[in-house]
Image 1 (tube, rainbow, N blue to C red):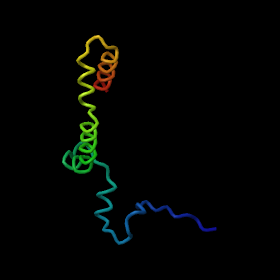
Image 2 (image 1 turned 60 degrees about the horizontal axis):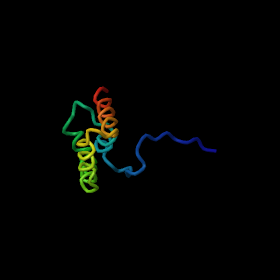
Image 3 (image 1 turned 90 degrees about the horizontal axis):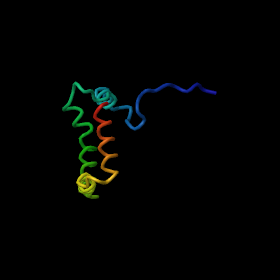
Image 4 (image 1 turned 120 degrees about the vertical axis):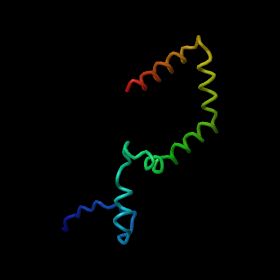
Length: 86
């Protein structure tokens, strides 16, 4: 039985792919490189924002937050506050 090799390259790239491309793709975006993070993750942010607009999520949040006597408003504000204290 042959011993499995430990190959750290992604299987989706051909072996002829330049090492620079592979190292760029495999390195995570850091907080020190905001333009690179925007390039790598901006498409997901835009897709999420578009989905929220299309489904009317933003209007639903606004209507919940306008009703001062609703219990869900208190929950949303509490959860939002907990997210900000991270």
